[in-house]
Image 1: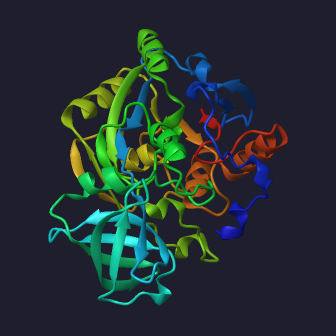
Image 2: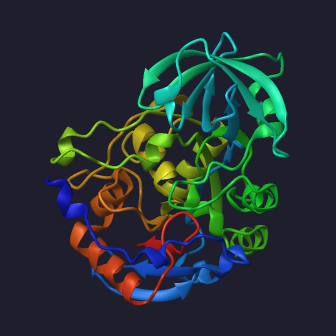
Length: 349
C-alpha cells in the first residue's frame, strides 16, 4: 500500500495546544465501521455507546518528565529528552542540535528553576540526535527527572521552559489511572477519562482491565517509506498480569466486547492474543498493524485523531477501513474537532 494514501490536510489551527478545562468535555466522534455512519457526541456520554459486560482495556503507563534543558560550558542552551537508564547508570537521550557536540564534552543539566543541577559528560553520539550521557550524581533517573524534567510533549504542541505551564502539563499529559513509570509519551486516548466517569461506567456494568505499554518516541515517527510495507516500526515494552488477563478473557467468554483504549492497548492485545484469549506476559512488541491485518480480539476501539502518514493512522484504518477513516477525519475537520494529543476522541464500533 502506498503511504500517500494515509495523507490528509489538517488546518494548523485545529492542532490542540492546550487541554480542555474538564477532561471528559472532549468531543467524541462515534464511527460505525460496518455502515460508515458518524455521530457527534461528548466523551462524557461514552456510556451511551457501551453495554453491560463490555470491557475497556486501559494502558496504565506513567509518563516520565523526560524533557530537560542543559547548557554547554560555552553557555549554549540545549534541549534533551531522556529515553532510558542503562545498567551502568548512563542515560540514553536525544538532544536537539548535536552537530556542535563531541564525545567528552561537559554539560550542565538545569533544574526547573533554570539553575545548574548537576554535571554530565557526553560519552557517545549514536546518530539521529541520540547520545549516551554519564551524570555526575548517584541519584537514579526518576529522582533526577523529578528535579529537572518537563512533560515530554510532542513537537506540534509549542512549549518553552516555563515551570508554571509545565506544572499544568505534568497533570494533564497523564491519565488519571497512570501507575507504572516508564513512558516518554502519553497514551493519549486515555486522557479523556476522569475518575468520576470511570466510576459511572463501572456502576453501569462496564468492566475495566489494565495493561502496561511504555510508549516511546517512535510513536511520533512519520512513515517516510513510499510503501507502507517498507516501514520498520519501533519496539516497545509491555506487560499484562494474570488478574487482568482473566478479566479480559471472562468478558470475552460472556459475550462482552473487548474495547482497547488507544493504539497502545490495541497493539498489546493483538500481540498477545491467541485466538480470542489473552495470557499474562511481559515482553516487547514491534507489531505494525496496517490495512489488511486481521484482528484477533479487538471488537471496538477508543482513540484520538492521528497525524497524516503515521503508523497510528494505519492502525485505525486497518480496523475501520481506510475510506471510513478518511471520511470521519474530513467530517471532524469540517466540524472543527480538536486534533492530536490534547484533542478530541473517536470511538470506532
